[in-house]
Amino acid sequence: MTNQRPLKQRTPSPRRSASESGNAMLEAALIFLPMMAMFLGIVDVSLAVYIQSTLTSATREGTRWAITYQTSYNGTACSSGEAACIAQVVQNYAVGVPGGLSSSLITVNYYTANDLTNPVEACTNGSCSTAVCTVNTCTLPQTLSNGTVVNYANQPGNIVQVVVASYPWNWLMPLPGFTAGKSVTLGANSIDVLGALAVGTSQPPTP
Image (cartoon, rainbow, N blue to C red; front, side):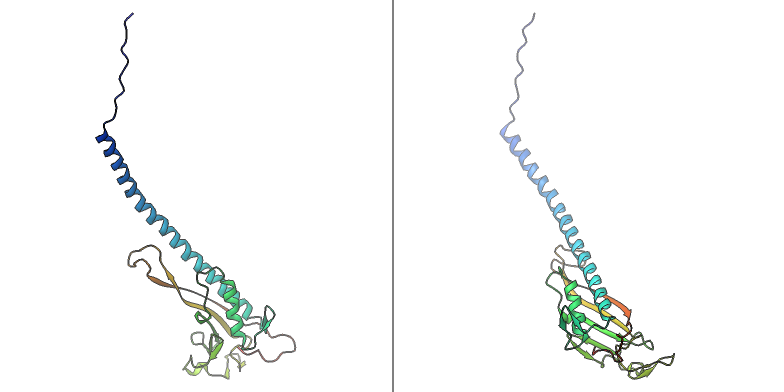
C-alpha cells in the first residue's frame, strides 16, 4: 500500500486577488449605469402615462358634470358661473397629478352646431369671454339649419368641451432630443352635447 501525499491548496497571490476585485468593481459599475437608466426610463414613462390617463379621466368627468346643468357642486353654489364648478370637478378628479392641476390650465368651450371649430364662448379661471371667435358663425343669437334659434352659449343642443392644456412635466431621465429636467407638456380634452334643462327651467345657468 503506497502512501499518498496530501495535496497542497494553492493560496491566491495578493496581486491576483486585488486584480479580480478591481475587475468585479468595474463590471458592477458598467452594469449599474445601464440598469439605472432603464429603471429611471420606466419610471418616467409610467408617470407620463399615469398623468395623461388622469387628465383624460378628469376632463371626461368635467364634461359629464357640465351637461347636467347643476348649479352647485359638493354643496357649494356655482355663484360665479358653471365654468368655475366644472373646473373644480376637473381638479378634484385630477388628484394625484404631481404639483396639482391649476385652474388656469382648464378651459371650458361652448360651440353651436353651425361651427364646431370656433367656440362661441370660452371660460378660463371662472371668467368667460366671447372674444375667442371673430367669425360671424360665432355671434349670438344665431339660427341653426333646423330652424332652432340659439340665444345662449350653453343652450341645450350646443356642445361643451372641457380642455386641459400645457400641463408641464419634467423628465427625470435624459431622452433623445431632451436633457434631464427638460419640460414637456401634456393635455387632454373631452366633448359632449349639452342635455335638456331641468323641468320648469327655460334658461340655462350662467356659463
